Amino acid sequence: KAGVTQTPRYLIKTRGQQVTLSCSPISGHRSVSWYQQTPGQGLQFLFEYFSETQRNKGNFPGRFSGRQFSNSRSEMNVSTLELGDSALYLCASSLGQGASYNEQFFGPGTRLTVL
Amino acid sequence: AQSVTQLDSQVPVFEEAPVELRCNYSSSVSVYLFWYVQYPNQGLQLLLKYLSGSTLVKGINGFEAEFNKSQTSFHLRKPSVHISDTAEYFCAVRYTGGFKTIFGAGTRLFVKA
Image (cartoon, rainbow over all chains, first blue to last red; front, side, top):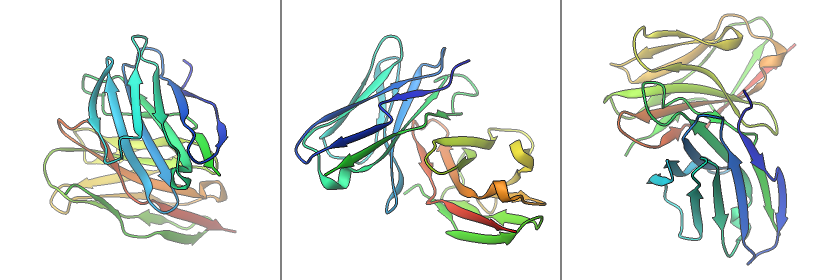
């Protein structure tokens, strides 16, 4: 079974631009979560989706948004990029319900650099 | 507020020595607990998990962890480490009924020859 895939793997943008990152979960998984990882703040929760609905949202400004499609693929968007948005963005998928829904499988991440 | 504390930011250890990476979480309500490992420029890989049942959990690569509800801890152990275990390790908590996972700050394990 293929793992979680994220595209692109690397991205360089300039301040003020916007960016869209994509995540394809493991087949059969209906939940996708996004995290931002930086050296200073560690792993910070962005949002979690299940069956196209946002179940929870972390403490990030409104410039960060996401969505999930009917095939469970998810995208996150960051508008008006700031230097501090440079980070590794990780996507994780899980079944979304049932006893094991809490087990998350992570993708390799998208490394975003904002210049 | 819900939080996860990894008590050591870095742990240097010699090859074949035992190691313990410590993790405490903030609340004693029902939780699910995880340890992940991250190698450079990669995502997180699940080492082991506690969802219910036995408090001693065995994972991949010879790691194990013990859930201690009274001390709200979930320490990770390995009896004999290898050079290849050098990586960053993250403890994570998910509260029952919650829809987010909270991660600790990470512990960098450095195994020396």
